[in-house]
Amino acid sequence: MKKIFGLWLIIITVVGIIGGATFAYFIDNDTSYGNSFVSGTLDLTTNDADGVIQTLYATDMSPGATVGPSNITLKNVGTVNGAKLDIVFSYAESDGSPNTVNKTADQTAAVIQILTLEYDGHNLLDTSFNPHVTDINGNGYIDIEDLKNADLTGLSGLDTGVSKNFDISVQLRNTTGSDFQADGINMTMTFTLEQ
Image 1 (cartoon, helix red, strand yellow):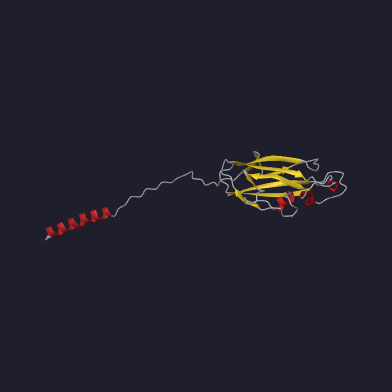
Image 2 (cartoon, one colour):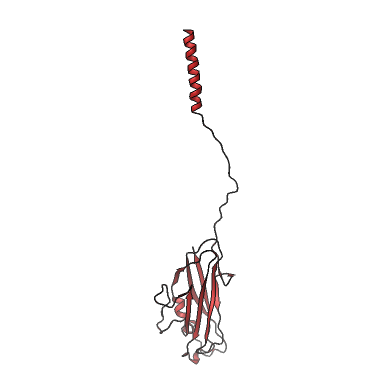
């Protein structure tokens, strides 16, 4: 009986060791260092310069005089693709001297006709292209005042490293009277690239 009891004790011990070994598992931990998270950049340049505001200057214009077309190269020099581009026009009065009849900035902007307005080869004056500029002030032609009130948002963006051209030309209307002598505006074009 002692032999049987001893044999059972040995069998139980062996089964316990085997059973314990089947429930064992390995653990190994490693740490990964040097992980960093940095957001990308969306960086629009105009004519290879930082800043997205460009100003078009035309001085000493006479009726019928044309300025341009002027080309502005837009480029995304960032690391993130730009999905859409918005263009906003604004202006402020900038009269010369002597200015005998002071016309407002809006009156002056309304006699400067837009002849060319293109982005990425698309004519923004063409009503079949969307978005486009329309004759908002109703004077029969597209002018700088119309640009100020135009909605030119959602144009095709620029991927990283891609350049697209923006072209503009203007003309002081032939019918501009002498009341506009020395009246002027400074027009600013703001380009906003969005992800």
